[in-house]
Length: 139
Image 1 (tube, helix red, strand yellow):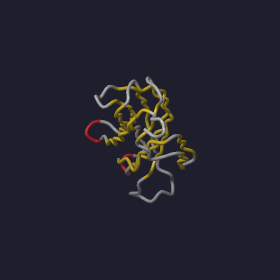
Image 2 (cartoon, rainbow, N blue to C red):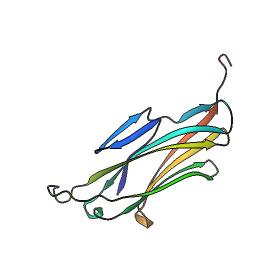
Image 3 (cartoon, helix red, strand yellow):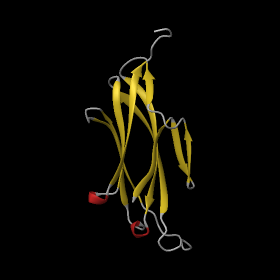
Image 4 (spheres, rainbow, N blue to C red):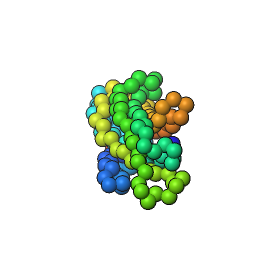
């Protein structure tokens, strides 16, 4: 199992094996005042090996501050079957999107953590981002 990709976006939706994404790949946003309501979408794809199909794999998405304090936690699972015409040994990509409103208590660094699998076989992707104050023009 591997995480093929993980992106921070403005909006994401996984439909019929395709990922629909708007405003992807950012790592900084601004807020006029604190605490700030920040809307974050996380889009990711997990690639399953042939022997990893037909088993539930836990998935966790966390948003943490730089000190490791958890602000948001989403838990779920993925289960990929084997279609009848899939060639033996093939991998498969399962995609997931989460649109998450988050209240950030301060300006500074945060991180989105995407984790799939469990135990020693788990894989993880870490996506840092920053929340900065809005600055008036000319300053």
